Amino acid sequence: MRTPEKYKEKHIPGSILIPVDKLQQKVETQIKDKNATIFVYCRSGNRSITTTKILVKLGYTNVYNLGGIKTWQYETESDIY
Image 1 (cartoon, rainbow, N blue to C red):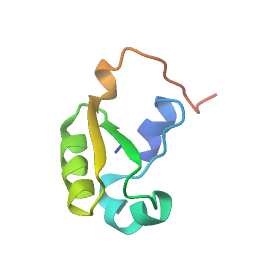
Image 2: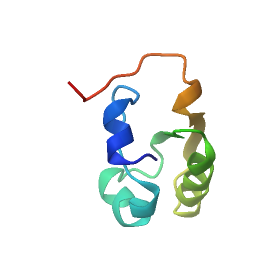
Image 3: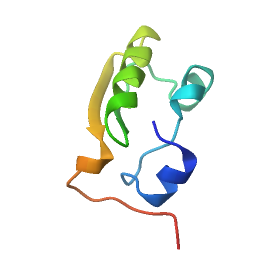
Image 4: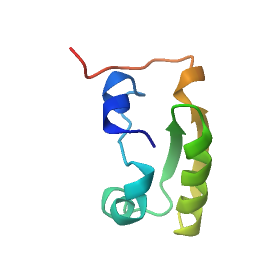
């Protein structure tokens, strides 16, 4: 759960951005299936813990915390040209 600016700089391909402060208002319209597999990450791993707890409280059942993108060793992409 990152800021739009940080998401544009670096994100995991195929991921969607829902900032943690907008999560409760937006998640159910963007992820309708409460049984969908959801991988959560942020910059350092702190907000992803909070986000994972919120999603579980909202009834999402397959939520996994990837931690921070700072330590992500796999493919990323940028929307900054």
